[in-house]
Image 1 (tube, rainbow, N blue to C red):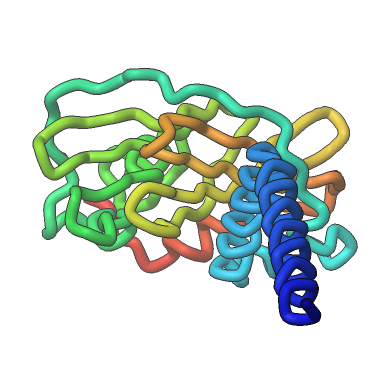
Image 2: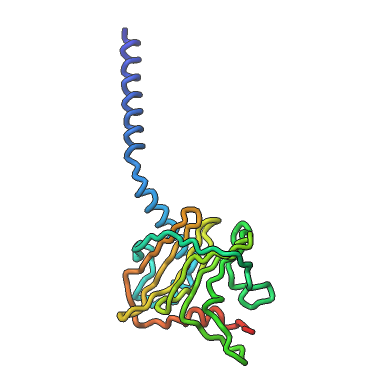
Length: 216
């Protein structure tokens, strides 16, 4: 009789544990999972861009907690046949970002940087683009930025996610920006820093990075 009673108690406890597990699984919010994944990508990108982070005034304190997701846009299907015009002997080739698994290269500088006529001195065009020259010979424009924006740095986080770091200028100053491009989901996430500063030169980072670039 005691054995039967003990067995029934174990069965009841096991049933309760199973019910609790099912409740816990049902309480998992997909939105929270996506938010956690985005915060992890934000943190990873900032950690890999220490030089860019340190280029901003200390007062802004560029930590992931200071960035907020402000927009989520679908990637525009701006794809056309065009192979990478930046060849290995081009000085900008080494400043492109090769895909981790060999699917072409991403370029964020060739639309921005140009040589003046009759000189090797570089100057910056008003607009910027993020372009993916894929291995299949297709060109895909991932991000376009007008004169108010500056695209400073980029990096692959993995085979499907690319980060762009830069700034936006308003009448109140300059604001650090973080763009996450997810090719698998065809989405563009825009993170904005909560602070603004007037103590910032928007071309200083690019000038320092490209200081030894010999354009022709």
